[in-house]
Length: 145
Image (cartoon, rainbow, N blue to C red; front, side, top):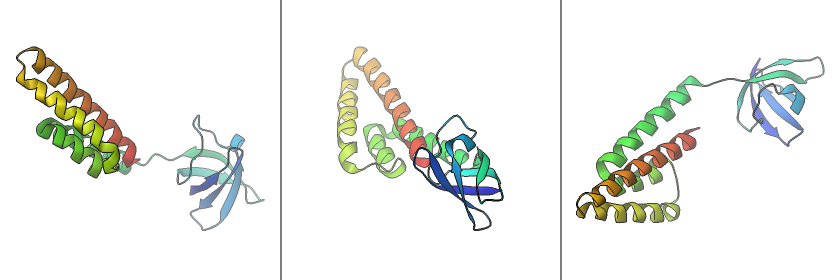
């Protein structure tokens, strides 16, 4: 049966099945190496006592493809728009608060000013921009999950 984890307290949890019923489970019934998390889509078997067993995570390919696409869009925005791209990527795609985005955007702006220094400034600018492209990509991917 397919279902969604409604909650897990570290030892026991509850799954809502696709038939509308709820099933309890213990940590031992979860067969993945990671911890069960709320809203995780799972495949499981049931017992006669409305318990779930042999629980495995179901990978959502559409969500993975969407988050990868958003991550690549973030990389492009950061590359073409520089520090403004960092701001746009973090606020609109990674869904971070403006307060948490101001400092990274200001640092990226200062790195952009180094482009005025020949050779050394150019390398620092390129390194900083690639760093922010990577960080923005990670933030967007994690926000999309």
